[in-house]
Image (tube, rainbow, N blue to C red; front, side):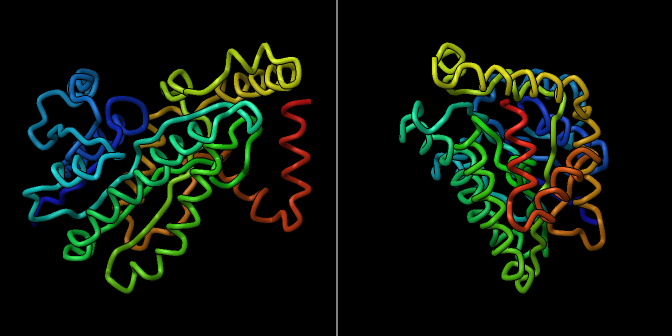
Length: 272
């Protein structure tokens, strides 16, 4: 059997790193990408001497970088869109440029990589997986820009899925809840300014307390990665896959909430 090749974005840490290593362990040829390959040390240490994992530079916001990364590939069986960036803020304090930046990484970056990869995926009858978030299902206070980007990803890919299926490409989104990774520590935005703001400071501090509680019981990153591997290898993977029981509960709340009142009650309590 021909070894299958998968491209994973955002592999310098967190879910991307764990997914790249897990896929290499499962026998895939892994193209592990990151914007700055100088940060590949943790990935290479975790992968050990595995010859079936290679590191390539890829900036998902730069079409030329995406083209260069895919250049020379004659086969690609799967893509895992994982690269992304968090952001905390709120409309009155965020600049529109900041919001556009969040969309550029989390939404347009996914589209840029997916568009470039689709001809290869069509040729192999491959799979396109994108790591979104429960924040792509339930809007979260002080995460307006981030959730908007994740909502956009889910809407775009849900619309694309039946079209891609006719071309032989399976599309799925992976929805984690809190995962024990470096993601929260790397979140951008205006957190310090928010905490001191006379209008938003108190509710933001309540939100931070909620987040700290959620991450105290966060899912191990390897466990989330194993869900991604299982989805890639499933005979007929579903479109929407949650990585934990917590994530399933959040998705179920939203999908059963036809008027939005249940979700608003829950998220309002986070900032009370």
